[in-house]
Amino acid sequence: MDKSPLLEADRLNVSFHTPRGVVHAVRDVSFKMGREKLAIVGESGSGKTQAGRAILGLSDGRVSAKRLAFHGETLLGLDARAWRAIRGRRIAMVMQDPRYSLNPVMPVGEQLLEADRDRGSAKTARARALDMLASVRIRDPERVFRAWPHEMSGGMGQRVMIAMMLMAEPELLIADEPTSALDVTVRLQVLAILDNLVRTRDMGLIFISHDLNLVRTFCDRVLVMYAGQVLETLPAAELAAARHPYTQGLLACPPEIDHRRERLTVLRRDPQWLEPVAP
Image 1 (spheres, rainbow, N blue to C red):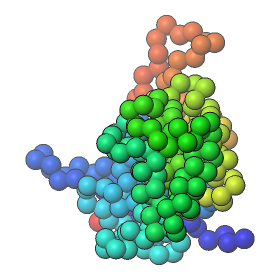
Image 2 (cartoon, rainbow, N blue to C red; image 1 turned 120 degrees about the vertical axis):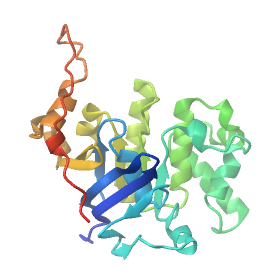
Image 3 (spheres, rainbow, N blue to C red; image 1 turned 180 degrees about the vertical axis):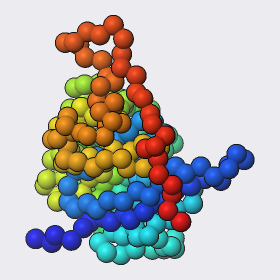
């Protein structure tokens, strides 16, 4: 079995020029991953989504890195044609809210077929789309294939987005908060779908989330981000034993039904956690 990294990031940076100066959204982020479930967690604004978008060449900011490679091939400086060969086909991304990711003026089926262009006849592509809808546990693929985005619930829309991203059979899937707007039952179903797809298709999964209790049971490893930097990397099963004060603070903040507290824990931040960005 190939043990080489699926994705490598070394000193990945994303910055934005604003009227108040340069904002460093991602600061010297480094990691390697194989065909595993890697979680990126942290508060809103910690740089999780920007890191994911930078990997796929979708960031609106200035992206730089000492190395950013997929299967050993650099992703920096690719032209539009090279990105078309990678984006969607080899690396795909499921955005957070399907209401803003699906085209409201196109039926679901047309959008699935668009994601599978250049792959044989229309009849073959339609059959693949129906099979993909069935693989994400949609009970009536034919009805959903003909449906419009506004006719679907949040959970159904999220499943359609996953099916669409998997039409090209990518090797790496980036899922940005794929369960944040779902109720508990639907969330568990979507997680089961992602877990099954990673195992059966031998994919890599970057799971962006703010839910530490979720990722500790679902993922293999966790990157904890704060203000654009990775403060701690550890196995997901050992998240409760995290050593960094920031990770400990994140774990202590959520309320617990079984342990009532008069006041919720307030996350305390230390300016010394931030290190200067490497030149």
